[in-house]
Image 1: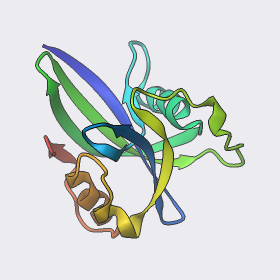
Image 2: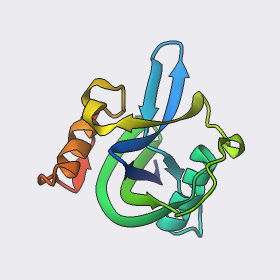
Image 3: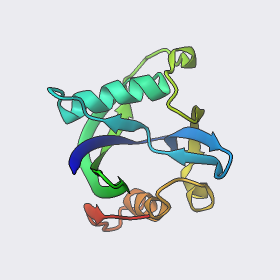
Length: 147
């Protein structure tokens, strides 16, 4: 079994969460935190900056580690997701034409935090965890395998 690190951005601006927007035939429209796999020789912060730029066209500044999640989506891959608080690089052009869309990704969206429980953000349990974080309520850093 291979262990694969994955980094995710939790970027909230003006009461909205930045997400990558996806669509497929069985799920319809759904959202994921932007980010992806760490490459060999790359720090977690470097991976997060690169992945967010590829998926969103935006340059992020990573800050503290907020949450850790384990994921066993494939039989031979154990993924460890590290979710960091991020902010946007100031004064950047927001040109979405340079986005390198992932498979099934159709763009990005800013989800209002107040509507987060009703939106198909996956894993679903993450909605409550992000709301707790925004509300300054205690949330565990290690989330285990949440769905």
